[in-house]
Amino acid sequence: MRVIGYRTLDTVQEWGRPVGDANGVYADGVVPVSLVIVDTDEGISGVGLGPHVEIERIFAAVEGEDPRAVTSLYDRMLRHTFKAGHAGPVFGTIGALDTALWDIKAQAAGEPLWRLLGGRDRRVPAYASALDIALTDDELVAAYQVYARHGLRAAKLKGGLDIERDRHRLCLVREVLTEAGRGLRPGLMLDVNEAWTRKQAVRHVGELERVLDLIWIEEPVRRWDADGLAAVGRGIRAAVATGENLTGLEQYRPLLTAGAVDIVQTAAVWGITHFLRVSALAHAHDLPVSPIGNSPIGLLHAATALPNHLTSELQDLSAPVGVSLDVHVEDGAFVLGDSPGLGLRIDEDRIRAAARTRDDHRAQGPDVRPERAGRRLLGGTDRVAAGWPRPAPPLRAHNDVSPTVRP
Image (cartoon, rainbow, N blue to C red):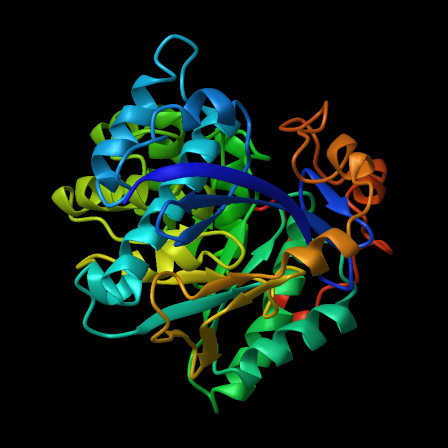
């Protein structure tokens, strides 16, 4: 079997409501999703979710090769980007091709990837993540009630611009999940997407921890700030989670050496081989791993074979336009199917029919870091920029603690 070509497609995830984080919002809820399809001379094609930046140069590393040698081909792709480097979207392109090769390998073996990788249990624990910073209180409650009906009892909210509002919203979701769990204490996390300084992170998480028990705070400071992340970790009770924007083992090593991370994350877009290697490195430090991303189907398959997988992010309950997945959600977990490979199928005609111009999404939204990021809190203009529909509501009496008083 040989790799003979590739195709690229661009589709969208249609949320039907605003989605985003502290850095920005897609007001129409339409999020771009890029796909790469790798073809072989035996008629088997594999699919990877991710960008296709510099793909002609990177694809040269795998063209004509046996796709079943996927881990060796991963390193070959890294070598093809040696001079320019493999960070950012280039690393995402490598990850998309890597995922497609794993898909081909498992299809050729006639097995679902989770079984080929050595997984025993097809169920992957999940937590809810609604990308919800722009939602009203009623919309927030309604969104997490849907997750709760699928058995999810842990949730990660977006925040970082107004600590009182963050506390209020976390309490609302806590009530939803507590009711659904018939009194069982739910798991709560907060993701601020690198919006804070070290001092802000310690101070504001400390305020939240007066009334809430957080499992983790995600990306409290910049992704590469090992000393800052370690300082935050020492100053709060919650775990520090980070890693979704790190590319390559060399970017994880300083954080692990500094004891700067408690929950090691990787993004679905970076590929399966990267996830397996990061997970092994984390396991050597007795740390759990948690995949990030919408429909992280490849990493879900890999998670079944890991001794240190904790939980995986569940964003939208529906797949991108023109994409079908052999996976469903029940009792708080992803349940992988028996389709050979990833169980991912593409309707290219539907994707092309639904194509639309998305340049406006690239110019704004959560992928663009605001000019004043890290220096803004409680500013009305920042609330508008984040898509917030109205000022923060008043706190309930039992949460009425002054942010100027230290414990």
